[in-house]
Image (cartoon, rainbow, N blue to C red; front, side, top):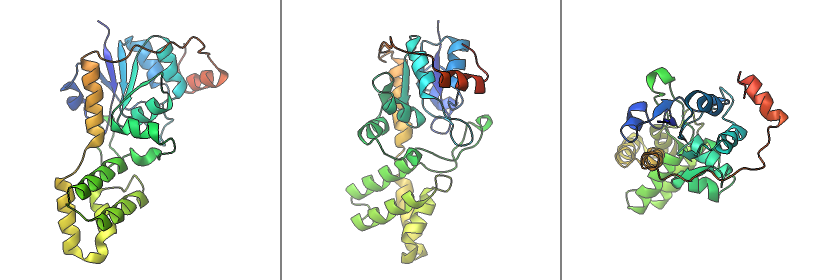
Length: 242
């Protein structure tokens, strides 16, 4: 039986993936990852949740299209997967709210899903929070009357101003409400931590359920797919051949 592959990292640990679907877990997708995985595993389907960037070349659009042209369904959600799925619609299937957000707002910031995390050996444990999760937390808290509209605006601005390497709920609240005093800061850190929305995890699990039940779409035909000079250059840089 051909295996299912999941590129995951800080969004869902390997254990969390395996709670939902029987699959081979691979580190966050980077340049060459998809081609290498297709060649090595001959998968029945691929889900991209997390991907590398900045410290390594990001997974290329062309290699995802190459896999789809080979007949391998590729699904994206939550993080880099949502980004690439939105960019490669209708060929790559996207799942979840974050994917739909990137589809609707073409110039939404890429770093809204980025987090600082540890290496694969420690399950890519996240050390910061994604902007999208912080925004969802603040907006839901406002809708429920937990925080005021004024605090929502201040908190969202503070989160946006932070670099993804430093973006945590504690820093967001501290930067937004420090003028109110330590007691207020501590109060709202606790309130928002208790109401924290893990949108990335939710979207990732939705994609894995779809994978588990085999409800993913068959690949859209790519009759005009061409191997370009830039694609071969990417292969060479990744140490791959096709």
